[in-house]
Image (cartoon, rainbow, N blue to C red; front, side):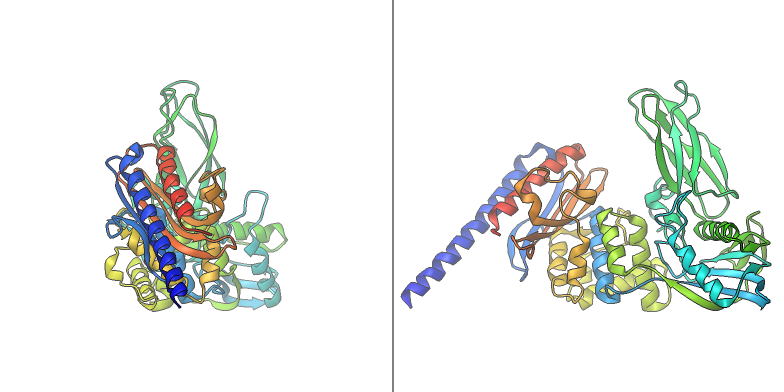
Length: 492
């Protein structure tokens, strides 16, 4: 008995010493690394029972950037389930006579962010073949009418209101809607002009949007000045303006900007797809404006929209797979679609207020106090998001008890893949983490799990840095030192 007590005491002492060493090492890194000088730093390391292994300003709420996606995807998987699928319905108005639809065909969006996702000029969207099969089953071989993109399921604006004006013209700030296409983005091939102050060369590559008017006011900048091109656009009118500079010494590249007319783009491409396989469509593509009027490619609102008769529906991949892509590539578009879907499923409204209420409810179900955080959007693009490292650690502990935990854990990349492609490269600690990154100007964050040798999580980790003036590469090296210390002090 005495030997047992002594063994237990020695074990507890060793554990306490390891915890003290980790605490001391983290404190030394934060205080002594020049890249973190003057920055706000929050760190929390907890075991899977919620016991603190080490912390540094763990209760300080900071801007988490894309670490917000951890909570978005985790809450959605917990409440909607890993097998949840988005649905896009096909319907019509009018009549079907001898194989001809005398009326309009509707693509009724259900929030699927993957419509047209992996498509391109020579790769038709995977969804289109499924929709065509629905037409075949209904006996529709020609259409005397329009293809109408219907995104009415989701109310409100595409973007969250406090995203910066520049961000909402980019692919990462385009905003999701009930019917989207190619993540509501546009690819432009851009190149410097012949000399400084000459116009930037910009050619739209994919998708085509023939109703849009593009004005190119981009200017070629001096060598070494980088790339500050932004596309300023709105869903209020079919007009977009390229502004900013592109340095004379920069190589040509593909820039990704926002397309505010995803439903119309989807309808236009499906219309062309049907024509290419021999199904005639007489009146082209259209969408529905916020007032409920059908709007054609001439961008003139026509008659009030009818209520289509639904004849079939296609489904997305499982939510677990979409959430995996969201966290792997830090996909803002997918994250906002998932966030708004939680609101739609909980209340029948997909506005941001409803989405926040749904996420707060999910946090309560996980046994967490949502009063400890401020969450404004799903992707982390809002700088009003405020979450502490301690809360992230607690959230990750709670998710470990969720029925959807295995699916959630699988959404997190390991160093060497996705947004973690350069993290811990060549370091022994690389195999021990599953993490979500988050970055903005002056912000770098990593949160996730530390694994044992079998790949089982043994601790939760959250490292948040705000207000840093060092380069991203220098910040990353500083945080790699913290991650390495955690890996070394918590055994496999």
